Figure 1 (cartoon, rainbow, N blue to C red):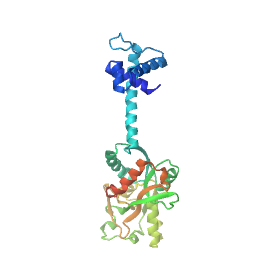
Figure 2 (cartoon, rainbow, N blue to C red):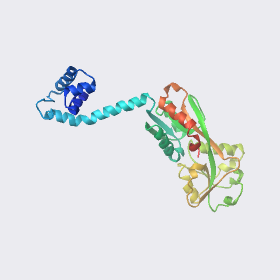
Figure 3 (tube, rainbow, N blue to C red):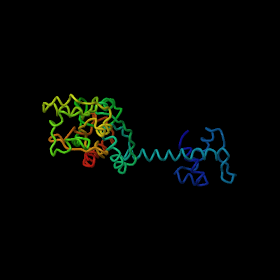
Length: 299
């Protein structure tokens, strides 16, 4: 069914005459008459009778009731698509790694949505490694994550270095030290994430660089980054974590800097090297992150 026929029908009902509808729609009156005739032929019923008070048959009233929302949606689609063509609307499939998914992303999207209210997001959480494959397969458009080891067919734009802190239970002996060094952790039980975690990889590289491999002997692997501070709270061990993940501190825990290793993995924007596949709205979102949100996003 041609949507123009329904629009003509509704305009006749709204204005009360064929002539009024013709003027409103900028058609000839004969075109309006033809539209109604075609609509009645397609539906197999009469819709308008001139001798009735409101001009509508019972079938016409029924059609009016069931198509009002349809025409509203049609108008909305046209408006939104026009916004899309003008770069004011779009759909972004976004991948984000922790702790940014829960700690930074809600604020980021709230701010961006105030600027671009007609942009829709689909969000996938995962590690950098987990997000690489869907990015290459175009299952997501852009990822906010840490720098991957292999940049084959990918382009990474750095935003900031993640701030790392030592998380301790509050009566731990190291809490009293003014300066804590990596060497001071040699007899401690360290809590690490497991799998392809950028924080674990970064810490291991720092340990190897300082030739302190004995630090890796007493470790406990935990599958959830968010859960680690609760293990620290129960004095099961201590951990080197992103500062933003430590905050807010839970009762019984404190955080301290470790000398010379406060700057952690580099967080940034990951996209496919083939920029031709990136939508206009995804480009705008990327540019927004680079120009307007870097300071807030790095807190």
